Length: 73
Image (cartoon, rainbow, N blue to C red; front, side, top):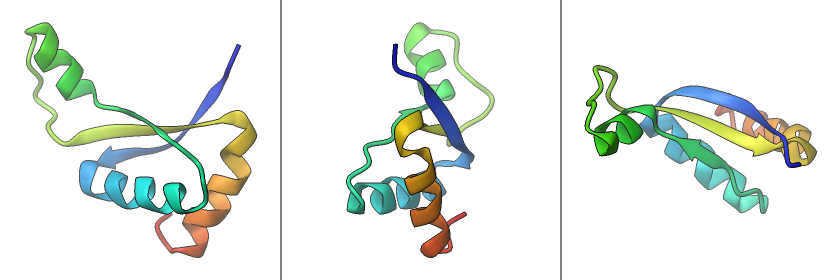
């Protein structure tokens, strides 16, 4: 069973920077958008542009290192 760790929660603008940085080091993050999930289910959401970023346990250290090197985290 694959396990993932959350590395960021917040603005979708910063999430795009994180995603680009991680893609540059061959890490594919999982982006969870609570407001979009709620909207698609018909519930709506009061928190717009708020997302979570997860990476696989095996890539966590590499991801944090890359993001700190780029001054994103």
